[in-house]
Length: 171
Image (cartoon, rainbow, N blue to C red; front, side):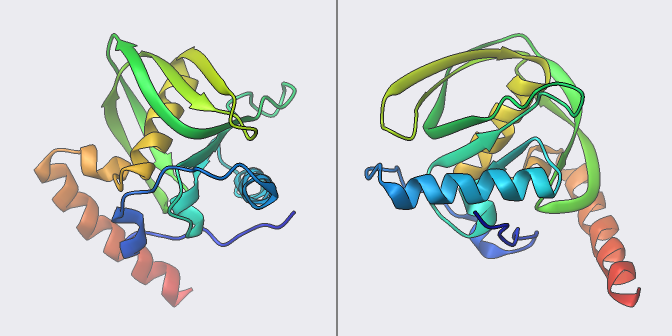
């Protein structure tokens, strides 16, 4: 296993669509292991393959928290097949370090996906896990959480983020 570098906004690769996974082999399993290790090391609750430079429909999630046993979900070709309710929670992203914003999402979702052997799976979620599923699947579409902000808030984000990154470079 290896911790991979996480791409940061405004990296153009983060805006590209990912391709469906058709080969369920050792290379895919290794990528999933690397992504899980990278996510835990960051630390984060989710990571999508495009964030480590791989345009494949693969995400890893673990919203269990430090005080609970790990609950790693590896989802290949995930899609939301049912959703209901509305929530507005503060989100952050490993590809947009040090920036957080309120984002509207569905409060409950059902995700259909394949496991690393290609077997169909389904998982229903609410709360943080539902938000994380939607957030990571957005990455596979080339959508960042800041793209879901209003035009005004997006404009404010860009200015704040540029200032934040300049300060980071000066340190």
